[in-house]
Length: 312
Ligand code: AMP
Image (cartoon, rainbow, N blue to C red):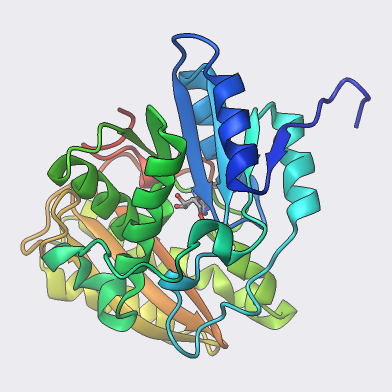
């Protein structure tokens, strides 16, 4: 990289965060926040780019939040690359990286006893298989909003249920943060980018895009006039079943704002699914309606066209 790239301020303590924020707030400026768990890829960086477009200053948080991991999940082995992340964010032009040096910086009094209850929208989809996960997510997001006081925060559509729940939390609790949801960024074979893709073996990686292919098959069937939710789900599972290393955890057709079951489905309906590829859990979703997807899958792809709550 050229020497013109300047490093963002790196805050690892509350004091450094406060100093960094005060500097950033040197006037009536719009502050954008991109909350992440690090090991950054182009999916995360698309959120950063959106924030840079929309805001005068951009902060990125990097924190592998213990509250959102269940027993037996991958908290200890979750990929971490702070140095690489800070470099990438500097190249992009981010102003502040908040990467708490340890969990005590976030939770000085120990794990919080008061937490945010996701309510019924946290019960289906991933919530059914990851009890406590969304409570942990919403609690840390609410804390980050309190600590950083952003005007705008970016969330990826890849984590559909998370983005919907954060939006609902902000509305229900009047948190005064504008939530922007951005499309799924994919590898060229359609696999949704994820820090956890690093866990995949070569053989698994070859099969991992089967999840997206299965979603596309259901989408194509809907475009051909199939409106039975059951039939669309059968089309999806038939593709998953053809992949030896993929096993289905769930697939659901939901209405995009409230995550309620969509039967019969409409063009706005989202098909959301989780599969295991070997030991690695993959999630993805597509909107059923809209124009046909193109071969190389980028954010402009119609399969990830902004839903009614996106792009605000
Ligand atoms: P994570 O580090 O996995 O917690 O993700 C941080 C943010 O990046 C979340 O809002 C995710 O939805 C978003 N994100 C992760 N992967 C992607 C992707 N492939 N495309 C778009 N956004 C993503």
